[in-house]
Length: 482
Ligand code: HEM
Image 1: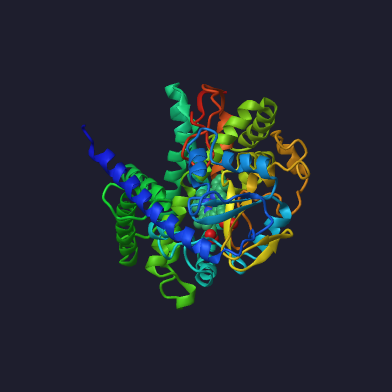
Image 2 (image 1 turned 90 degrees about the horizontal axis):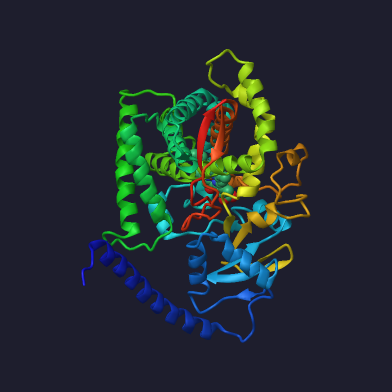
C-alpha cells in the first residue's frame, strides 16, 4: 500500500488522539466512580454521553456537515427543551437560551465567569493575547488597545478602505466574471486590516501573512502535539514567522526608519510612558496577531450574508440603493467616503444590524463558571462551560416579531438590553466592531450605488468545518454597472 507523507501524518495524529482519549476515558471513568454519590448532578436535562468523550463525536460530525455546528445545539434543544447540558471532550457545556441568562453572565463577566483556557489557543494566539491573559491583565491590555479602535481614531481609514473596495469592485465589473463574495471580502478585509494595523501594503507580504494567519487560526482548536505535519505544528511554525515579521517592523519604527500613522505606531509612541500605560513588545505582537485572527473571516462572512439577504429581499435592496445613491450624488464626483458620510447611512446601518442578527457570525459566546451559581434560576456548577446561545436569543419570537424575516426596519425601534449580542457586550465586547462597521458600510455603499448583481448559485448549504456560518458556494455574483 502506498501511504503518502500527508496520510501518514493524519494517521499518526488520529492514532495519538485515540490512544490519548482512551487513556483519559479510563482515568475519567475511575474518577467519576470514586466521586459518584449516586445522584444526578443537576436538574438540567441532557445527555452526558460516555465518560470524557461525551457527545464530542456528534458535535464534530455536526461541525463537519453542511448544516453547520449549530445543528448540534438545535437538535438537542428539540430533544431536551430550552435548557440542556451536554459533555464535549471532558467538559460539561450548558447552552444559555435566554436574555436573562445572557444578562447574568455579561454583568458578572471576568468575576463570576471568564473565557475558558485552551492550551492550543494560548500557544497559537499567544500568552499575552486578550484571548488568554488572566482577568487582571485583560483589563489593562484592553484599555490600552481600545483608543485606536474608536470611530474617531479609525476615521482616517474610511477613505482608504473605500478606495480599496471601489477599485476592486470596478475591476470585477470590468472582468464581467462571476466571483464569490466571501472570497472577495476575505481578501479585501485582510488587506484593509494589514493597512490599518501596520501599514503593510506589499501584496506578496499581505498574502504570506494571510497564509500564516490561516495556519495559526486552524491551530487555535487543535490537538497540541508538536509533531511535524500536524495542524498544531503548522500553526506554531506560522506563528513564529509572523512574530519575526512583527519584531522587524517594531525595530524599524523604534530606530526611526519608518513612521506611519497606524495601530503599531500608536503603541510604539507609548514607549516613554509608565509601565501600566504602555504595552510591552510581547503584548503588542500577541494582540496584533489576535486582531488579525479575529477579523480574518468574521467581517467577510457578514459581508457575504448581507449580499445574500439583499438578493433575497429586493424591496430592502431598492430602499438601501435609494439612500446610497442620494449620498453618492450629494458629493463631488469621484470623491471618497468620509466618516461624516457613513454617519448619514442610517438605513445601511439597520441593514447591517439585521444581517448580524440573522447571520449569527459568532454562534455562541463561551464562558466558564468560576464558582457555583444560578443563571436564570438554573443551577450551574463551578467549572461548567456556559455558552450564550446567540441564534436562540436573536430568533426569539417574544423579542423579535417574525424573527426569520429579514426586516431592517425593525431597528426603527430599540430592543431590550442583552437581546442583541452579535458583538457580545461588557468588558469583552468585540474590539474590532467599528473597524468591521466601517468596512461593511463602505462595501454596501459602493455595491448598491454602483451596481446591480445576479446571484449565480443559490445552493443553501453551509461550508463544512467552519465555526463561522457561511455558504459553501461563497455566494457567487456577477456585477453590472448601474
Ligand atoms: C462582523 C464582524 C465581527 C463580529 C460579528 C465579531 C464578533 C465578536 C464577538 C461576538 C466577540 C466575543 C465577545 C465576547 O466574548 O463577549 C468578539 C471578540 C473580539 N473581536 Fe470581534 N467580531 C467581528 C470583527 C472583528 C474584527 C474586524 C476585529 C479586529 C480587527 C475583531 C477583534 C476582536 C477581538 C480582539 C475580540 C476579543 C475581545 C476581548 O476578549 O476583550 N473582531 N468579536
